[in-house]
Length: 334
Image (cartoon, rainbow, N blue to C red):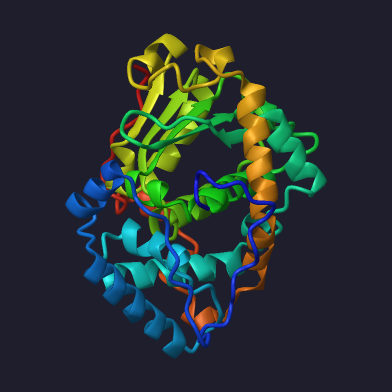
């Protein structure tokens, strides 16, 4: 969505895998993002045009892809995340589509008018803050303590992450500069931790490793309870090395402020803008994007058990116990 334009709602995208005319409209990059795209993503106008054509041709010929977005904003999610490696971008797109089929309880019904999802939005479970950091990165803030285990399950939390992501993935500045995520874990209870199973952790790690079209630059956890730290380290063992090295835990907000500009985070945590203003802006963004979000459920990818991508198959605890995952850096509190 053009950042400076006010719109009622964004129209639902065309899901014809071979439309008569492709949607090539993209956002103009500011000078900072142009440099990032050129220096770190290898992007040039010629390479972008060539890669979009190649990916669209691949979609048309893919027998399992029945309906899919082919507009430039959508495909650039994958091309920019994978720095214009066609093979890696096409694999990630295939895994993204497959995971939507395998885990519909995480990926579908991203509707701000859904009572439970709207409740989590209004409670401030997860939302992007209004200002970007000095490096142009979008900061996402989460308060895990707002997820009431009597009303919500792990699937609701996952859908909230998908809701935030899907309202941001098409943003050119997000595709180039990436994300910084900050989570307040001080309100986590045993009841919340009891919602999470080992299978959930493995599947979520698989998605983050293989199918998420976002450039996560930093992950910050603040006030992490000791039990949650154990679960986090188990999760960390399943992450790829690049993501593991970008995760930090902090004992206090003062410690976080040494890494993240405190003016960006909600006023209640040391920032400038009150939490309610960040949440209200995100809720409006969800309303604007609602037709696009609901249209995602109409994409169609045929997944057979025999051809299920490795990224969507179950991992085995034995992989970790026998060390085949490899060594990893355990999370420590700063």
